[in-house]
Image 1 (cartoon, rainbow, N blue to C red):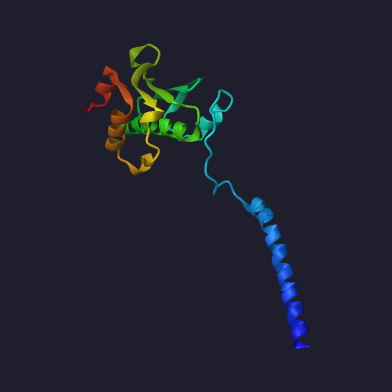
Image 2 (cartoon, rainbow, N blue to C red):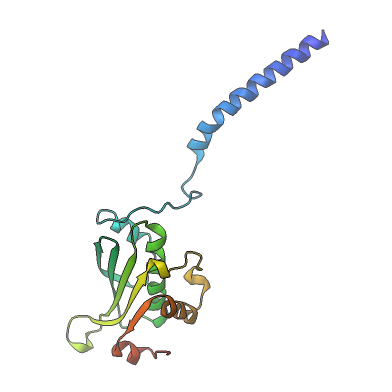
Length: 175
């Protein structure tokens, strides 16, 4: 008699285990959260550039964004109170973020315009960078873990930087 009870108990446990295992994939799909998923790189186009740019944390205001094949051009607007560290962080973060989140962007052109009214004209160029995907290193650290000097050295060594006389007057350039 004991062996019948054991056999029924073993059969019942086996059936419960089989049902639980068959439901596991459905439970996994329902409980998955986007927080734990890796960000998938996707092609950037004129239709989704706003979504891609809105996920990038910048200190400066965006003045203009243009998508042209594999090139993205971004104009940022620096106020008179914008510090050198904020500008350098944005120049570092923007190409890093766009290269990480896209599959079709090979070049990012960033211009930082000065919005101060002392010149009496429209915003004038402060600094510009030409970032190419082949020069970007995907293993690079987040800007928050690097100092201003480290980020600036990275920009100068990996990307083509253009400094204007206005930038040199405002922030002493290191050669």
